[in-house]
Length: 502
Image 1 (tube, rainbow, N blue to C red):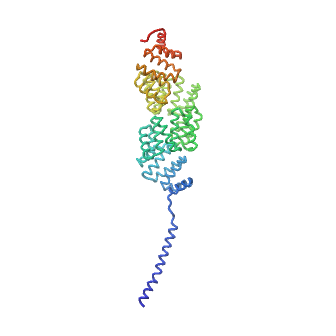
Image 2: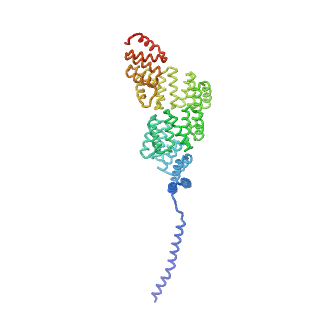
Image 3: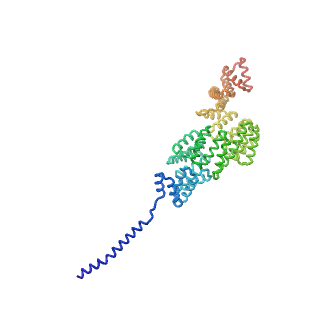
């Protein structure tokens, strides 16, 4: 009896304990139900994007960007893909403030590229910061490749861009490589690479602007304009596109149309000295239109006022010098060009124009060679500069380097400058390689049948070969075109009179 009573007591005492455990479990269940579910904003945004809700994705990412670096980075990429460069830069900046290591390097690298497209002067410093955060990262490498191109260091830029492309950098790395090739002066390679980048990413600002630049520099500005117009419509914050559009219009002789684009670029850019300088370039182009119309004195007066307004602008001084050349004032032109070179030693046009004045107006071929060489070094892909260098080498009696340069130049498939073939022929005649001169000079006369110098030089080649009949034919053609050099005309008269070439 006692044992049964004890068991009953134990059983009764256990009931409250079981009830308490049940209550605790119920409480835990309620608390679990009330606890907030943590959602990854990046995954949430990606799900919304997959469902076609881009605005919803942006809203999610914006709500998290202050504290979540990954969300800020994703927001920057999304904003940039929509052409919203300003807010993309802000998002990348927020991301870089909270991320570390490779993620920080990517945020800064992407920010540098966006800043460069937006015309923000801090792009270079941001590229350096990206590399400091992640020296081997793809985006820091792309950003640094672009920086090196902007600094005029194409070989370094090419190596960096190739490294980024090999590491999976895609279209941005390809565009960076094209920019480096353009910086090196290899316009054919740059054009092909820019097109490759555009095929991979039709929205790429840098690739589209870069291709337009190459087209302008190779005499196809009209092809570039519709590309830029389409880009500006899609991405109105792309300062680089406005800048190139202005230069494309200048190249087509539409300086007045270019002014609106230049003013927009200057107003939108943040500390971009090139955009500010562009406004002056447009006004120079307008003055040069006055020169072309025969209003040289008016152009000189306008450019002098512009020089006073922009005393440190090399472009303005080059424009003024060109107007002074048209006015046959070499001394004033040389003064302005020397100042332009001092202000901007990397201004290839200043060196080229200085060489032209020295050669054509002062007869100083040796000094002209030096100026032209500098222009070619700065823009190795510019055939006009290379042709002028070849011509000056001939004038300076340096036939061997002239032949080397002009042979390579005229062998280019698209080269069609008759003066290059004339100068090559003259270099061969100078070196007494008369048979070699003939093909170059025949090419010159086919390109420019009215070029008296080409016919005269061809005459001297046949004279050197002792071919009297061909000499009379070609030298006679030069005479008919108004060639006045007395030595050739004297020999022509004698040979027509029966003299034998010995």
